[in-house]
Length: 341
Image (tube, rainbow, N blue to C red):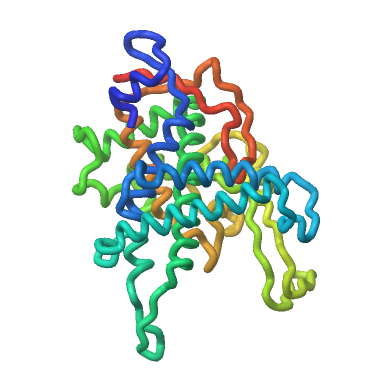
């Protein structure tokens, strides 16, 4: 990622160090990863879709901050017409992408192939998703697969740039696991993919990633809706009630995490948590995010590749201004100064 091409694009500071807005650069990396792993294509093929979804994000963010008026979305205002146009264009681009890959996707193991694969129901009858259903799923994976990963990696790098002692610990652990290999290989991938293990590389780096997800979760809240009348403690919740779970408030609750709840301390994940539901960056239960393992493995691999080649500190030009733009991200970018070993 931060190879010679990126060195040229960064701001030169000296012969052995350079400054990069990692939030901007990581967008290209995570977009390419989700494109290839989920759809068997590359970033260039899905570039137009990503750009259109970026425009949609701006419109959705504005709508969330506006007063809700029932039925107003049907009024042909300038923004409503733009929303309809973007939705139509995204679906057309995805339809073309699916059509271009339909001959190879059915026999592949990527997401698109699985979505197009016919399965049998309980009666033994063959069923397939309709094209519109496949497009809906592709839209979701394109957006979530890129946005959550780019923000997780951005905050990880920023926090390690601020906390040099943890950057050193992570580097020592990565070197211990990967040995002299320049990059992770098929032989040592097994050491990276078991998230729950508390040994060697998976321990320190895993704690760092968890602490980052606690302090700066990509989604600051979750919504759920009750489909039946339920009783929650002393509360009677009728069917159809929408519940907003303030994730970031729970993740920063001093009663749960201690007086240092707002500080970066990965050691808090060295032991099991007293409250099982106090940490849910990807949700909990049957509605947990299906891309959780992919996002964490992606973060571990990217961090391992970067941290073995570079040391890094926060640039004086960085302005700390987190903003909720559907996901939690740095408002003015994340400028970091890298030094090559």
